[in-house]
Length: 525
Image (cartoon, rainbow, N blue to C red):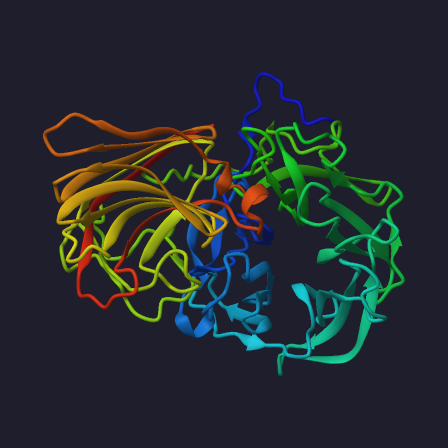
């Protein structure tokens, strides 16, 4: 059945979570749906969302929101928290994930998805990445993961999907480890992201393969015994866009999870990217939603087209209230909004919403945005191809090394810093491009005012930078700067672009700070 509307049917628009929200995992509890995504080196870790209709999602917190839960010290942007899986069993929520280079695989639990979640229960006997949990109908729990092939890695990406029973009382793995499947293709690269489901007497093992870039795909196998052997679907891959070409508007779809609604419909959440300005993906990997039907014992994704579409008929569910975050944050609440993040684990509180009520104060730190450290940075995701950012900054540098302003951040080696400082006792507004760790000053102007409105306007891959001194007209610093260095296709890695507020003393000790009165983000695609 093709998901085509008649005149009376409502449609929804993909992606359901725009911007850097990769590796989605979903679970249902009665009529409530919960979704989590990867967060890599950003803190708090693992944003968690709630919905009643699978389309309109509201962030209700972060799973890893305490320093005791999440050590990201010294990690690269694309290290840290990979591919979480969320499941619910007998009154408890379980989440398992990997802290890559930060401890390995672990599980956290909570009676309430809003938290607080437990401290990590580490599984040192669980190798690899991309863990998942499966609760069988007999009450037993199983842990799945992705590991290097037991016989040795014959080639890059020669991995293995494995399974072992998890004792829920001791939270330890017990019994034998079983190799389940290597994927659909011969000599497949990177079989990963496994999830198990039970339906009509069959265990279904759905995975991603091909790597998370252009060749990404979703494949599936089944068995009547949980430990296998597993038989691959002859129609594999059940979802991929790799055959559609690099000019297709949605690319690298994969790493999916399935959910059955209370009304018997099946849906898939899946990551994908929207390239623009060529094959460049500044937005990172986003979360999409696609319908699923079952035919002859196998799932068919997006029936009638076989690809993720931008528009579908809404699920047969009561509509949730649309969650539209206000475009402007006036910093007049006691806590930061949930869409704000830090970079790596903050070991000290360098920000305040109370020292100057109605303003966000960021205390300058010696650490820089080019360091693998926890700089004085607070950022949010870029979620649109075209966007405008405005903020009002008040800053009096105490020395020439002190700078503050806005940053467009892909990684420590790829970024645009729109910053205010002093040089020879005069205020200087400048744009610094950092590309592969090499810095260039693209534009600079003398601005002798300590309060500025700073503006960034992105039209596709053309980024323009403006400013306004109070009671004066808007002025241009530089226009049409190439934004492609903010894409993973240039920078590498797995993350999307962040837009942030920052201040640094550039390796000097200081007690100085920068104040932001408000921050505004608006966008369209």
